[in-house]
Every structure is written in structure tokens, then in C-alpha cells.
Image (cartoon, rainbow, N blue to C red):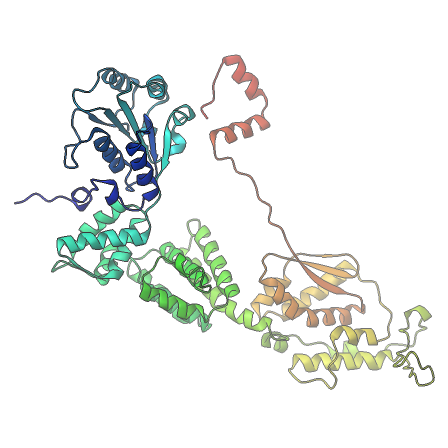
Amino acid sequence: MESFVVSARKYRPLGFEEVVGQEHITTTLKNAIDNNKLAQALLFCGPRGVGKTTCARIVARMINGFEEKAETNSLNIFELDAASNNSVEDIRSLIDQVRYPPQFGKYKVYIIDEVHMLSNAAFNAFLKTLEEPPSYAIFILATTEKHKVIPTILSRCQIFDFNRIQVSDISKQLKKIAEREGIQTEEEALHLIAQKADGALRDGLSIFDLMVTFSSGRKVTFSDVLNNLHILDYDYYFNVVDGLLAENATQPLLLLDEILRKGFDGQNFIVGLSEHFRNLLVSQDARTVDLMEVPDNIKKKYLQQAGAALPSLLLSWLSIASQCDINYKSSRNQRLLVELALMKMAHVNAVFKGSTAPASEAVKKKIELDPPAVVQKAAPVSTPQSAIIPPIIENPTDPLTSKVEEPKATTNRTKTTTNLLDALNGKPSSKEVKPEEKIVQSAKIDAPVQLSELKKVWTAFAEQSKGNMAHYHLLNRDFEFNGTQITLHLTNPIEEPLLNSLKPILITFLREQLKNSTISVIGVMREMSSKKVAYTNREKFDHLTEKNPMLLELKDRLGLDVDF
């Protein structure tokens, strides 16, 4: 039986031209070697599986003029795994080897993988040799966590930052290998494998080998990849969004139930749905369409569905999904949390439609004024001259033809109430007049408003608005009152058009009930306070010393040093 060699080893690049997705690195190294300007200490940084060790081996062969198929474990090339050889003794043994020149070739190349695993003592023992190595020694250090390498090492190395490999580049490389191996593949399947690789070509090759073994007839299909890698199909998310756009919460809930019965995790679903919303957002601008890392046929579906959703609606959905993702781990009923998020999303579209109308249907049906309380005739009182509205003059330049209207408080108030009820019931008013103008035309004394009375009237209006949960939640926010102006605190930009649609009815109701025509309502966006979090060791130490300055004195007295 012939021994099997995984694709990651079988198709490991032997030259710079075969390295995928790191052109900025390979071009620099090739020019440095050709011009004899290669540094003696190199540090390769980047995620796993992007070609750091591969490029180190290529450099070692090229500077010595070895053939591409030469063994990497020759006398001139030394590879050390710092994860298992991280002590001072291991570094001292390496330094002893550096003293001897190469037996053949020009350079001795030392490749130290996962160099961040070295202890501080080992790093310090390595400093002098790394700074002034012999002319025939080249050190190539590789790490996935550059921040763990001490600054004295970083300052002595020429640093090369490797990028995550693009999905399209991984997909093309998989297609080349499949053609060499005579394996039939579907473009969507290779694209899905490339996405699952998360920027690491080695992981993509490993998944590709798994799919070839799983499939029958040496054919990799999209359905096989979905089933084997336990990935949700794009169609699930498209169907969920179709249900949300139709304001139908039933369809998304049924799809969620089907997804959970297939063994998928609820958080994976909500994360995938957030990614779907993001793709719909970038699909709405021709300049950002290429930011989607999906096959071309799926991209067409995104473009088609994006045309039916407003950007503000997608942002609202994305915000709800993000909050659900944040609270998922701490929730005691995780399924209900996801279902509640879907029901909220289905309701958001109705809110957006209602924000463009004069008032939502639910508020029209629920808010009812008490006619006897409003129309009831008051006892005659002496009205001060300052409280009377000035007469209305149609033509101020012609006093002979000017018309003077006597104030009629009861009649105007009755008309205002009638027009308001007509507006709430959807009836056209006899004369289109703004609510603010209606109040101005009514001659009455503006009674001072007490905060306790305002809260009672405000609560009554909010309770009558329960038919529209968006309005109800908005009215249950904290507000400030300075005698005439009510300032309502908003938490996101979506609530501003919602308040504007509700404001005419709300102001009229408050003015009528509180007998004050100067009351106004405004919305103010509340700024979210950001709390600085200490991440690094230095930030944590500085935070502790701020709370307890004696730590600095203790550090100095004991001669301690902080590991930053």
C-alpha cells in the first residue's frame, strides 16, 4: 500500500513564485537575495498556515544555491521548535553550534519556529548572538504572536508581516490541486472550503483532503461540503430575510426550529444571520459589492434581495442580532432569546412603514380623548389682558378692511378636540391646520404645569399606546422637564423618525389635558459613556498603582521588576 501524503506537504511551495497570497513578502525577499542585501536576523509574523516556515525554507535554499528538491534537514539548515525547546540550555546549545562555519555552502540558516514560546531567560541569552552573529549565520524566527516577543528581540530583527490569505486565492489554489489530482469539483464547494479555512491555506488543504475522502467518485460537491462541515446553507438566511421583509414572524421561527433540529447551535445561526445582513448592506453600493466573499451566483441573490430592504432597516436588524449574540452565553433560555430577536426584527419593518404616516393605526384606535373633560364649559372668569391672543389682521397695511376675531375659548377648544378625534379616526378635517396652530388660536390661560401632573398625563398617553409596542417603549423612556419643554432621551437614530410621527398627537394631548399651550417635546440622542479597559500588563499595573500608590514604593524597596 502506497503511503498517503497530505496535500499540505505534497504541494508545499518550493519557490517564491508558488507561494500564495504573500507577494509583498516574496518580492522583498527575492530582491534582497538577488542584491545581496539580506539581513542576518529575520522575523516572520502572521497567522497559522500562511507560509512563514515555507518562506524560511525557500530563503535557506536560495542563499546557499541548493536545488529546490534538496532535503531541508541538511547540515546547513537547522530547524528548532521553540515550543518544546524553550529553555536557556537549548539556546546555549544553539549558540555553540553557531560558532562552527558551514562545511559546504555559504550560510548556516537557523529557523526557530514559534519563537514567542522562549522564556525570558532564553531570550536574554540569545540577544548578543542575534545582534552580532557570524557572517555565515542567518537567523529566521517565526511566530504567530508577535506581541509576546520582547522588544529587544524585535529591535534586532527585520520584521515581515504575513497576511491572511484571501478566500479567492485559496479557492484558486484548491482548484489547481484538484485539476492535478483529477478530482471534479464545484466552484461553490471550493469557495465554502476556502471560507472555512479562515485565511490559512494549510487548513484549506486539510479540509480539501477530508472532502475528497468523504465524497464518492472523487468528486467534491457543494452539498457534501455542507453536510460534512456542518455549515448552514445560504438559502436558510435568504428565506429568513424574506419572512422578515414580509413582516411575518412565523416563517423565521419555523426555519429556526428546523435549523436547531438539525443540530446547529443557535449562536452560530445568529452570527451567520448577522453576516448575511452585512452582505446585504454592502450589496447596496456598487463600490462595496466586492467586499462580499461569496460565489458569483450567490452574489446575484444578495443584489436581488438587497433591493427590497432599506439600509436603516438592515442596520436595525444588525443591531438586534448583535445584542442577541452578546447576551447569548449568559441567557438561561437561549432559544427564546433568538426567537425574541427574530420577532423584533419582523416588527421593525412595520415601525419603519409607520414612521412615514401621520400616525400608526394602533394609536388611532387606542388613543381616545374624554370629550366631557375637554368640552365642558368653564365658569366665567375675568381674563387678564395679557392672556388674550392679539386679533388676527388679514391686511396690516389697510386698517379699514382688517378683520378682528373675538376670542372664543370654548368654541376653539371644541373645534380642536373635534379635529384631533377626526385625525385619530382617519377622517379628513374640514380645514387642514397644524396642531400647534390650533392651540395658538384658542384663547385661554396657560396654567403652570407640575411635574407630578405631567407624569400622570404622560403615563396615561403611554398606556393608551400599547397597541404599538414601538411607541409604547419609546414613551416609557426617561425625560426631563423645564416648565414648558419636555426632553425625551433617545438611544439610537431609529427612534428619531418614530418620535416625529408621534409628536403631533402627543403634544396636542398634553396641551389639552394640562391646559397649557406652550408645552413642546424634543428628542435628544443620549451619548454612550465608554469605560476604558486595561488590556496590557502595563495598563493593568498603572491602574493598580492609581488605586494604591504604595505599590510603587513597595516595588522600589524590594527591587522588583514588572513583566510588561
